[in-house]
Image 1 (tube, rainbow, N blue to C red):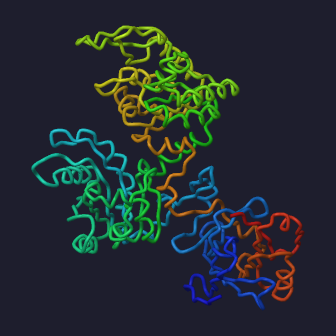
Image 2: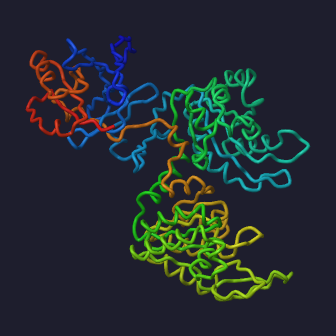
Image 3: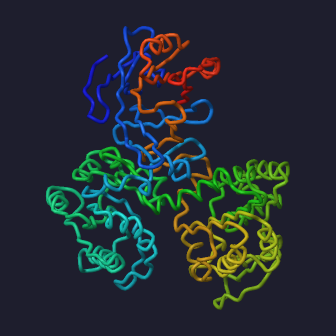
Length: 570
């Protein structure tokens, strides 16, 4: 045990190092008022009055690492350790804080105290992968979606440093792609975006040091450094050497472990989700974990082996699963029991029939195409004909769903409350967006008023824009890689790297009759005798006991208004 002087905000504290490393409660806590039957006294934590502005509420901070807790079955503890900040209770109660259904919490820029960011250097990891053509930006969408976070930080007076990667523009003018991106950002923001002289190093650090409040700087293309994809720790540390706060606004990269996302987050004061990150995450995690029934999933693309886990997971959640793209053809071959096809797909045969059995057991409709638009390989004019999905002539290949198949898709989505479309709709279209994808986008736009529609993927989002139904779709995401991982049930490294926030907050004025009194915290309350003995001697104090055993807590029947026992679950 070693004593340490805390800031004036926290008063005097004790850091407790327990030899029982299997007990996270004992080994992870910074105790500002530790007591147990084995200690000769209890150190009082004189929590400073937060001078709450609304309804006389008092916000107290307990520096420990609790991420979830239940207080008398209704409330929960607020963690407050270095890098974690207190939270407004009204916002927390209104659901302003993000919480994954699997228990992961992360802190968002939208609810972070603005005054703490003013005048500070904030790095924003964006995804500015614009499309270049003839030394011009032809698709501005990646920049458009990044603007809200950048503008928000600019307006509150933060010193904004933008980090991103993009496909380099082949040109004899070095750095022309960076100039084009900075110019487009400047025009949309109405503020000059300056260009850094690199990514890391003394020159870049000097440029950052000279930034004024509200300034915006764009760093060099991260794709030029191999340390980025290697998540090199030294590179990450140098990247944020002059950075105070880190904001991840690139949810599309959350499935990857990069130096600018996972690595850089380790070396800053706080790690926050940007406005676009939060906007993308919420609907995608809902569809992955708790979709609203009736729920229809339209799953496309190829590589059935890689997506079989997703299909098997979806048949447990969906009312209907519409399978499109090249993997629809693979499944048709397997279910037709054609010997040649089964030989080629022998590794997928068992998984495919298991999925079919699960779908039947859960009364889930698997919708596969019954007819297909096809073209003849030898026909240079690519004339299209419709054939039955089970009898495509030799020398012809499928490119689109046929009319009858599209009618089945329309019928499947008409009565649903939630629709997910992820993966290519066409089979082997080489000219870009398939006609069927635009037709499907129109269908989804028509049901947008009665169902929540989520579209994920580059081809799918372009189809939505071509059909001019973007305003009718609930959520459109340009990237689908992170969503594939969520649908598989995998965690996202980019999300895990963000700061935790509490599930709920203690309502101190309900928990204690006089919440402004000093608080004594007993870690590991046991049978509560020690805490009650202390309470009998010091009536002008509030006492909070923390215990992991719910049964012990449930056995207490305390009528003393200034003593509470809490069950903590980690």
